[in-house]
Amino acid sequence: MTQGENRRSKECSKNIEDNAMKRLRFFALAALVAVCFAVTAPKTEAQVSVNIGVAPECPYGYYDVAPYDCAPYGYYGPEWFTGGIFIGAGPWFHGSEGFHGHVNNRFHPEHGYNGPRPARGDKPEPGKRLDKVSHFKGNEVRDGRGHAVGGKR
Image (cartoon, rainbow, N blue to C red; front, side, top):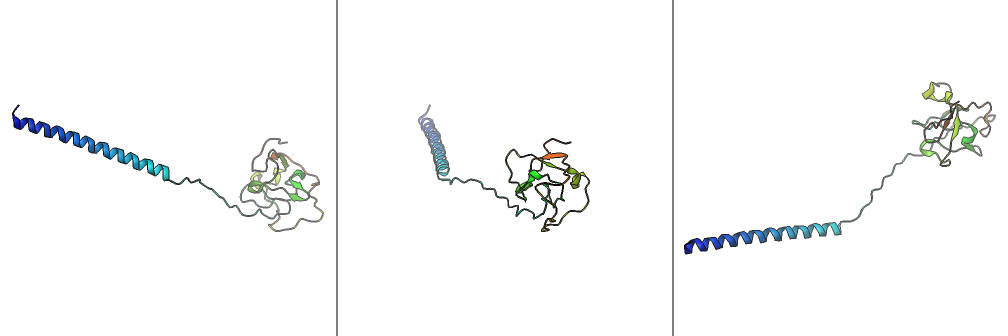
């Protein structure tokens, strides 16, 4: 090997070492920056809020499925009322966790009912007691959250 070749070989070797050191420094700096971002990133929690509005004002309760129209007298059994107040259904249900109450689904539009129904804001008729629905014929059990839970007659 001549002196010129020897010098070029050393220069080439030095360039390789320099490039390797530059890459190592670059990756070390990139790792340091990534750690800094991870440590200083603010912790956030997602908050989801759904505003469903107020419950419909109906004299004998409302159906537990959208559009939450008023139900006629006789759809809900007496266990759906406490002190003459409807315990709610669907998104406004505020009965107990394991609640199951009887309904007469012949008064439900999904079962073909298209008879008279009270309008929102109507007052109950004086002779129609909510704590003892006269001649109530419950044929389905529901959970207040829009689900039939068995107990059909």
